[in-house]
Image (cartoon, rainbow, N blue to C red):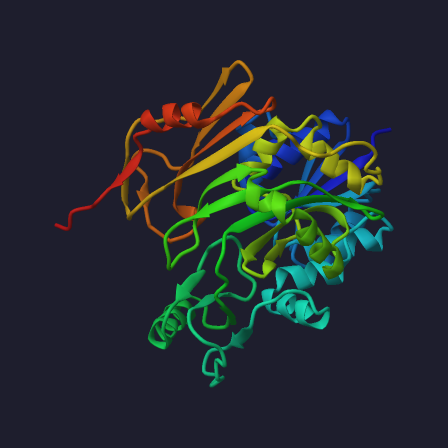
Length: 403
C-alpha cells in the first residue's frame, strides 16, 4: 500500500504543481492536495499531465482545525503533511503535529512569518538586529529612529509593498497609500540596513540543520527592493555563511527546508527575514538542476521522517536573471519559454507575461517579465550564455496612449 503525502497549498504555483507534486508521484506516493482554490487546480490538472495529484480536496487551509477535520472526514491516514506556502506553514505544522507526523515547530513558523515577532525574537535572544516599530492606522506612535527606514507589511511576502523611505513625508505617503489598500493591516518600519543581500538555503531533519549553499543577490535601485539577479555561492554569502547559519539555529529553525535572507553590514550579517519554505521565483528549479540530489524529493523525504545522511552541499555555478518591466502597459514581443543545453550548461528561460496582456506595475517581483536561469554543475563561466539569452529577449510593455 502506498504511503500518503498530503500537500497543503493556496493559489496555483509552479513549485507545487511542477515541483513537489510530480516529485511525490515519482516517489510512488499517494498524493492528496488540499487547497482553498480547488477549481483552479482541477482546471490545471485537466490540461497539464505533469500536475497529477491523486485527489484534490478543498477547505480553509489557513485554519488548522478545518485541515484536521477535512483529513479525518475523508478517512485519510497521512504519512506526511507538507506545505511550501509562506502563509500556511503554521496551520500545516499544527495539523502535522496533531497526526503525530514530522513537523516544523509551529511557534517558530509563526515567529518567522510575522516580521514584528521576528524582530522581537532577535532582541530576546540577543541576536544581531535592527531597530523597528509597528504602526497601525490611526495610531500615533513615535518612530524613534533615524531615516532612512524600510516600511513593509507586518506579514508580507516577497518584495510586495516594501519601500525605502528617506523622510517622514515619504513614510507618511507610503502609509497612506498602503492603508488605502489594506486598512486593517499593520506596517513594520525598520531601520535601513546598509550592505549587500545574501540568502541561506538550509535543510533540517530535526537533529541537524545544514546549509546547502546560498545566493548573492542584486537589487533594483531604491526605493524598492526587487531582486534583479542572483549568483549561487557568491563571495559575500560564502564569507558569512557560518555566522548566518548560527543565527538561524539560535532563532529556532531546525526542520525541513528554509530560505532566509541577510544583509551583510559592516558589523556582520543581520537577518532580514525567514521564509520557512523552499526558495522561490524559479530558483527552486535551478537548484533541482544543479544539485546531485532531487531538491523537491529530498524536502518531501524529510517530512516522511528520513534523515540527512550524506553530502547535501550544492556545487557548480548558477545565475538567475530577472527581466523586470520598467512601467505599466500592454505586453508586446515574441519571446517564448525554452530550455537549451550546451555541454553541461543548461539555460532555461521562463516567460511570465504573455503578449497582449495588460500589465500593471507593482514595484515587486510581480513585475517580472521573465526569468533566465543558467546552471553548470561543473562550474563553467555563464556570462556568454546569459548574454546570448538577453540579446534575443524582446518582451516589453508598451505605454498605453490615452484617448
